[in-house]
Image 1 (tube, rainbow, N blue to C red):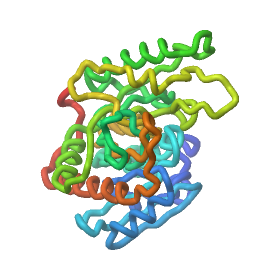
Image 2 (image 1 turned 30 degrees about the vertical axis):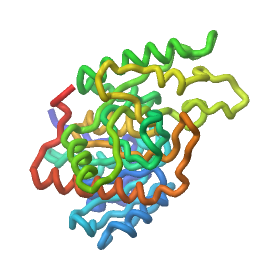
Image 3 (image 1 turned 30 degrees about the horizontal axis):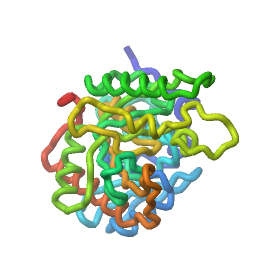
Image 4 (image 1 turned 60 degrees about the horizontal axis):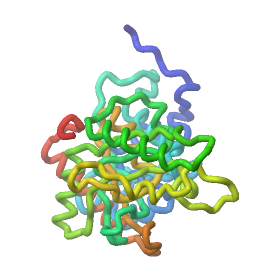
Length: 326
C-alpha cells in the first residue's frame, strides 16, 4: 500500500524545520544526550565539544550538535524540558527528524536508529546510595499518564511483575476516600541492555561512583513526589513511605531514585526500536533530606559515560534491542 504523506497538522514543519525544536534533519546527530535544563546544553557543549555545526534555541528548547573532543564522534545535546509531556514533544520531533523525508512528508524506506541517553538529576530513594552517585537506570516505573497513550508491548516479564506490584502498592497506599485512589496506572520500561552494559563498563573503568536499579518517574515535582506544599489533599500522601516497602523479589533490584522523564524516554524510544538509557545523579536523599547544591561534576561524568558508551557500541557494531534478559 502506498504511504500517505503526513499532514501539516500531524507534523508541523516551518521552513524545513520541526516546529518546537526548530531543527532541520541534517542538524541532528544519531547519538543524542537528552537533558532537562536548557542551560545544561551550552555548559556541556563548552566542556565536551571540540567543534559545533548546529546551535539552535526555540521555545525553551536548546540543541547543540558537534564533534566530541574525547571520542571524535558527532553528538547532539538536546533539551527535553521538564516532565513527560514536554519530553513527548521532543522525542517525537527527534524521531521525525530521523525517519521522515521532509520533502515528501513520508517515512524513509530505511533509516538508522538513534541512540539516546537521558542525563539528569534525581532524588535518591535508597538510603544506602550516597548523594553524588550516578544511577544507571535498569528499569523505570512511569507514574505519568503520557506513556499510556503509546501502546507499546511489554519489553519483558520483569516489567509485567513490576507494573502489577506498583499498581497494588499505590492502590493500597491511597488516602481513604480519595477521589482518584486506585486509578493511577503505572507502566514499566527498561534501558537498552547493550547501552546499559556499556555505560556500566565505562563507569567502572573511570572509577565513577554509580549504582544500577529502578527509577521512578513521577508526573510532577510536588504531590507527585510526596511533597505536601499545596493547600489541597493528596491522593497518596505517604507516597515515599509506600515506595520504600516495595520488594521486587529479585536480588539486587530495588528502587534507587525518582525523577520525571526516564520512564517515558525508555518506553517510547524502546517501542521505536531505538537504543535508550538513563543516567541520573542523586543530588538529594529523600529519606534523610541531604542535598548536593553543585552537581556540575556529576553531569560531566554522566555525559562522558554516554559519549564513551556511544563509541563502544559503534565499534562493536552492536544493534539496538531489548530482546535479551528479563
